[in-house]
Image (cartoon, rainbow, N blue to C red; front, side, top):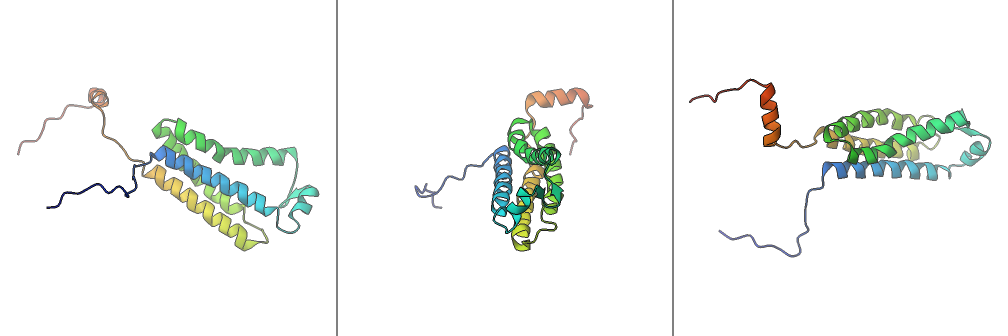
Length: 164
């Protein structure tokens, strides 16, 4: 048998924590939202509509802007919440919010004239949201610590090992 030698040219494949992956995915979603909106200003007539006080078919008002800010704040806060909430709460929150964001992402392309551009954006957003859903759904579990095990034994009846 040959002993495995360390190759100095091999890259370190240290595992990234799920929290960091989720925060990175939500950050990617936010960058995509921002760049789709910024590049959307180059669509002919878009700035004229904004200057006339209309976005899509909605009048620009304080209500519209507060609603838009609220909708954008949700994924922004998910960057923070993915890292700060306890694991169980973070997992549930990511599953719920990413699930709700999928139809919202698809709604943003309805009625747009530049279908390739907006549907590509929607496809990329949905892919990122699917990554978030998968990361949250498959969040690894770790074995219970002795302290956790002792606490759970208080609430469960004792079991005797089976004899062979």
